[in-house]
Image 1: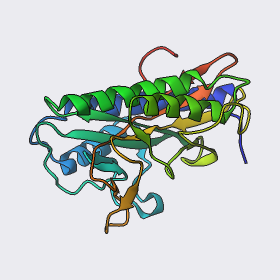
Image 2: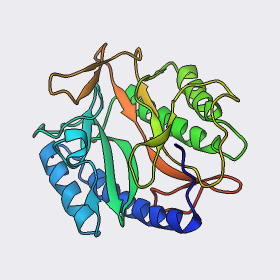
Image 3: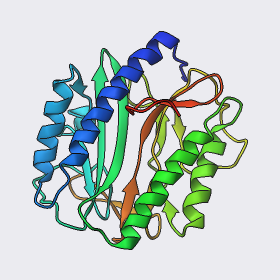
Length: 252
C-alpha cells in the first residue's frame, strides 16, 4: 500500500536525510588510496550513531555491516570486507539510517584520486540521470515519466540501466510501495502526488545491463566485468516539485 506522508512526517524525514548527507560527506572525504572498506564501515557506524540515529542496514534481511560499499564492477550490496581502495577505483557508497523511526536512504559513487576519463564520464552521466529523474518527479506525472527520463539519458550516452534493482517508496520502512524502475514509458504507472516519498537510485553499467550475485549472497557484479555506477537520493513530492531530503543544500 502506498502511503502519503504528512508535513510533520516529512519534517522528520528531512532531518534524517540531513544527518545521512553529513555521514556520506564524511565518508566521501575518506576515499583516498589505502583506505579499507572496513575502515569506511566502522566510520559509517560511528558517524550515524553520533547523530542520534541507527544504522538501518545492519541486520536488514541479514546484512552483516553498516553500509554497502561496491567497487568498480560491483553494482550494489557490496559487503565491506577489508578491501583496500587504490588510486583509480570508483567506490559506490550506499547508506541508510533511522532517525526517530523514520528512514533516509542515499548513496553516491566517488572517484579515488585520478580515474580513467571513461570512469569519470560514467559517474557524471549517472549523477545527471538522477537529477533528471528527480526533475520528472512532479505532481501529475507518473512513475513511467521518471524511469523514461533516467533511461533516455543513460542510453543516449551509450550506457545501460540495470534492471531488477529499483528505487522504492520510503518512510517508516526502508522499502515501501511503490517500486521506482529506472526505465519506463511516459504516462505509465501510478500518478505522482504530493506527500509521496521515494528513494530514487539510478544504477548504470558501462557495458550491458546484466548482473551476477557473488557467492557471499549479497554482492552484485556486472556480468561483463565492466564498471558500474550508482547515485541515490530520498525525495519528497511537494505541491509543485520534488524536494531532495538527503542533502544539506536547499530543496531542488
